[in-house]
Length: 322
Ligand SMILES: [Zn+2]
Image 1 (cartoon, rainbow, N blue to C red):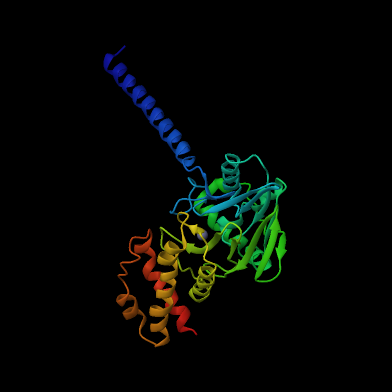
Image 2 (image 1 turned 120 degrees about the horizontal axis):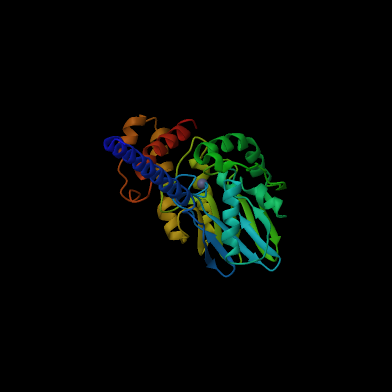
């Protein structure tokens, strides 16, 4: 046998083996990376828990759970606030609840119509939970279902498989409804803030506010094409008047009212008073955005660089048209 030929062949085989090995390691790494984020429950007070999601974007890694969820353990079962963005996300929320209690999720209450608030409803309904929302929230869920499902497929790919949009089957008429579930009192109030259909859940006996996407801390809130700065500001003031001791915000860590005021309330006031004020005075858009480009009191918030200017621009448009 020609030794040169043999050596070359051996080299090729070696290379092939190492390539296979590298591919296997990458494959394994990808799989484990996807399972990296595991939601974990933290106690807010008494029997009330929060699950605080990561601040970044929806991803296969976090199964779209880049938002906050919460639950209340009652003698008659668990009340879950919001159900996650997919079937797999809902399963991960269920696993986080199971770390705290073996009681079943008896009720799911939705605070909104955006993907991560409700696309896990079908999973919990399949386990016997009653899914509840304000009628206006459920209507918006149905309206945006297709769009949000498509959006999530772009972020999560095949991990969206098995997700069926189920708008809350039990709907409550009116803008503010008080419910008694398992001995807990919950007031569900329409805010129509960050997204049409948004609501908060207030637990008066526990002094806990699940604000839904009305409050963002640690990261700058986003003003979306569907958001209303005017409604958000009004709703924030109404929430502050309740003086909640604990706020589980839509995004960011559990906080008190002072932090919510600094990182959300003050920003809405700024958008309405300064940017909205300039729009009402018919000042030019670009000059207004330039004038308020640097807002040091909000600059520490995650996403500030990306969102601050577009937020001002959308606020300007909203106030300009009034
Ligand atoms: Zn959100």
